[in-house]
Length: 162
Image (cartoon, rainbow, N blue to C red):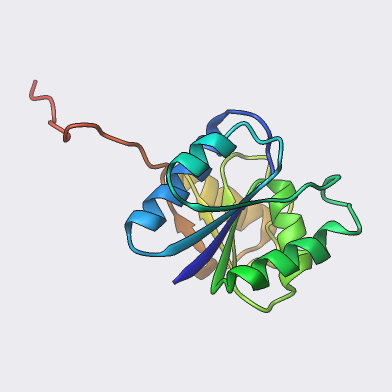
C-alpha cells in the first residue's frame, strides 16, 4: 500500500514522535510511506535518517488558500492509496486536498480534535478518546479504531515478573 503520512507541526513533542513511529512502522511492514512535513519541522532530520520518502511543504495554516492545491499535487505525485493525517492543520488541509479521492484517516492524539468530521476513519490513542469522539462528533463506531501509540523496544521485551 502507498501511504501519505502528513504532519505540519514544527515542534518535538508527542504528536511528532507518533508521526515518526507511524512512518517507520508502516515502512517496516512493507508499505511505501511518503512523509509530508513542514520545512521547519524539528523531526525532518529523523524522518530522513529512517530512509522514508520525505517531502516538505510550507503553509500558512489550515486556512491557507494555496496549501490544499499544493498538498493535492504532492499526494498525487506519491500515488497514495490512503492518507494518514496527524494534527488539526494536517487533517483540515488533507480534507480539502483530496476531497474524497482517497481515504483519509485522522489520528486523534489528544482531546483537542476539531476537524474529524468528514474523515473516513479515526485512530484514537485511547478507548476513552474513542468514546468522546463518538459522542462529540456523532461518528459511527465502525469508523473509530483504538490505535495506541507505538514504542520502540531495543533488544527485545522482557516482562518483569513480580
